[in-house]
Image 1 (cartoon, rainbow, N blue to C red):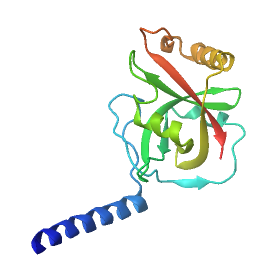
Image 2 (spheres, one colour):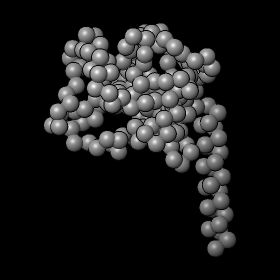
Image 3 (tube, one colour):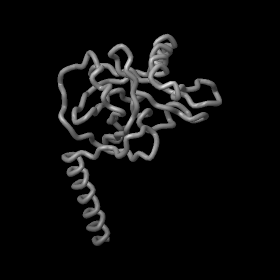
Image 4 (spheres, rainbow, N blue to C red):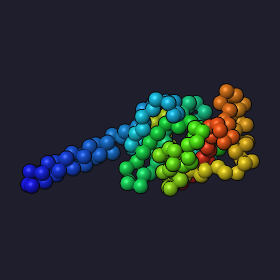
Length: 173
């Protein structure tokens, strides 16, 4: 019994040390294509920008972003996502395949719906923000129209038998 307690204690100490090291160094998600061949990460590393962003146009130079959410068990979960810029406003995208339930189909989306506070990474800069799921049909149509102008091949179906693109408006913290 004593040997088992020592083994369990040693494993717990190693796990705590690993989490401390990952917290200090960060553990960014791997991959640059949203939803394909990516591996999620934990904490994002970089320089925190404390100035609220009112115009996100500067992110147009990036293909994707990294997004860190808060899990219910207190360890961050980070992923690579896509985004759309519309009139200086930033929208994070999440494509759900046909039949995949919202928000349970993606862990990061479930986290955001429970706790909208996130951290975004563009380049080496980190931005603390909140996400708001876009449900207004007019706002959604305007943003998707902007997306269609830039990338006509990326039009998303909203029928019950096709994929559904969900949008999240980025708000200041």
